[in-house]
Length: 253
Image 1 (spheres, rainbow, N blue to C red):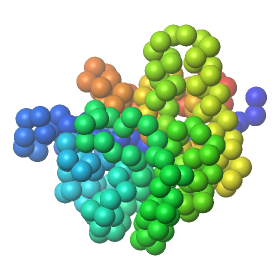
Image 2: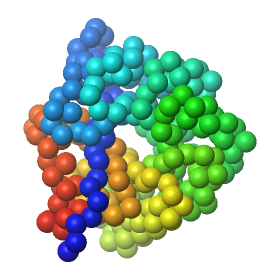
Image 3: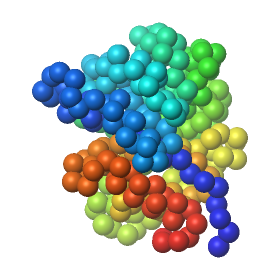
Image 4: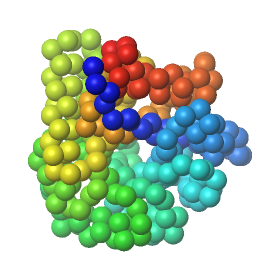
């Protein structure tokens, strides 16, 4: 099998900050986690500064930007407050996500088509500040078309429904959700968008997604940090990277 283009791993450090905030103080430090992940092979670091500051804090974003040697991906809601902070921090990338104060985690993709008049100038301003802008969308061709119209450089395909299908262990549903992701990736790449994916990916379900040649980046956080409790962060990052590489090369998939 011919080798597919390489794929990047973005490690999300939000839940290190969640643990720190549960007790207060400075430990564990998400910046230290980011550096550890980078040493183990992470290609970029993602952090989501939420409106309610439930995990990552403003100072974390600034410290991450100053301290890490790989691109920083700033996950954010499309609000005036977050735009101001992003323009001050100047991360390498910004991923716009929907945000509901009552949700435990991001529940779905942006309605880009329905918010075009608002999002298009928002994307333009972020891009003007030097960020590669991606939009977090469900695997829906209409939303991907809208992301391109809005001026995004990339889309991140929401893989949450695929995760749920894998947990339910119903082969037909898994295949259906996976086919939606694959078709969305092909569609987006055909429009000239860079294709990322993330949400709910783990050791057991990552390889089919990583094998899709149009996808160039996976962003994974909760599973990596949770598994690190048992195996250590460097070991988990290395194993995830190896699974992704094997899926790309046909080594074990």
